[in-house]
Image 1 (cartoon, rainbow, N blue to C red):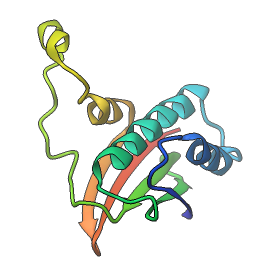
Image 2: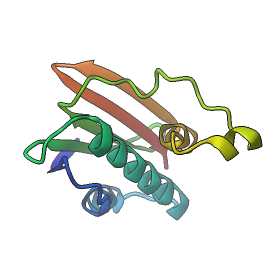
Image 3: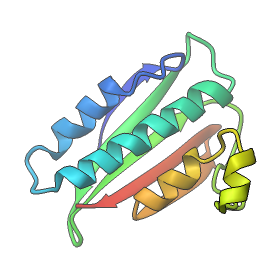
Image 4: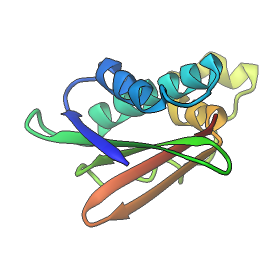
Length: 135
């Protein structure tokens, strides 16, 4: 897997989306799959920048690779912020009444719905969130 590092204080997903798009360009994938990956990237970056407790001198490492059987994109987000497993929280109540009272909190839930697999580990002092999307 190749990787890039983006500033930990920048929520702009453009460099990450371009990096992932470059990795995927030699494979046959749907525009829908790419769009879903882009949405997931944006949601995850916003969460890391907002809640990981990183400084402007810190970076977020993004790794991306494409694997076969089945053909899938794998994107990892690695940061040295506060240990936090976003998958440990119970999925939110998405009923109409609950949504009327809710402010935010749906980002990771949406990522879980869009991706084929989402996993988290804390290793070597780093948060590692991995998303996979079948292409």
